[in-house]
Amino acid sequence: MERLPLACALLLLLLQGMMNLYHVMATPQEYWARSFPNTLMPDDICARLRPVPLGLLHMGSDGRDPRFIYTETLREYNDPKETTLFLEKKLKVGMRKLFHFPKSDFNNASPFLPREAADAIPFSSAEVPRILQIFSLPPASIEAKEVHRGLAWCESLAANEKCPTSLEAMIDYATSSGLYNNITVLHTSIEKASVLQVYTVKKVGHDAIKPSSAVCHNMPYPYALYYCHFVKEGRIHKVALKGEDGNVVEAIAVCHSNIRSWPLWVIPTGGSIKADNQNYACHFLPDTHIVWASA
Image 1 (cartoon, one colour):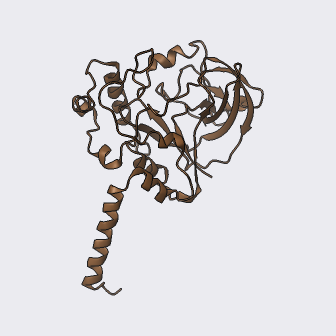
Image 2 (tube, rainbow, N blue to C red):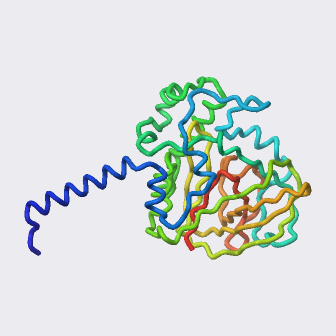
Image 3 (cartoon, one colour):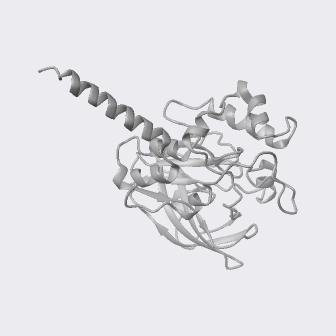
């Protein structure tokens, strides 16, 4: 093979540098448009593309920061005697089960940082004091404990799991198989805020989802942070439910053959259920979680 002339080699290096610069400077919206030119960004993601406020945001009568998912709140809204897990074979029209689907306020949820901003912020358990200082979070607060817990979880992940700290990084993870044009973005849609009640399954969509599909779970953090993993042996279903008060939920159910000790922001309540390769254990995703489904 002939060697490239020096001028051509220098031009290639220049072009590569320009592409790397664009990769860093592109806004999340531009990065989305480049990655998914035929897919509109969901409104729920658009609403979270805004500056990150510093300090605590005590909004509402409960005096809690809307950016954080409080494990105490999750326990309050679920029946401690009943697990939110269910076997896949029972997921059919007419299934009735007690659930709580809290409707998120995306305008106040933790916002997405641009990649370059997120990459400039420390992200390790050793740097927690600095992180709390950056976001003006009191060291003894519940929010500080959630930051500790989230970082410890992210540092314990397997090689094929990740905690993206920006929308661009999450897109990179979801599209790492190269299936840019065959990815559909799925998430749970909730009609209105509601209470713990019995929901009835009205429709179940058995879509063919490949193991290359990724599920990203929203974590409690000052800015948008997700725990992402590939479906692997699992399955994903789109399920229509209706509550006793008439609330309509278009939910995403994720089913696994192997259930480990998930944190409460992945599965709202614990409880034991026997799952294996023939009987998958399923749970519904909250509306802030995202599925990158490759068909």
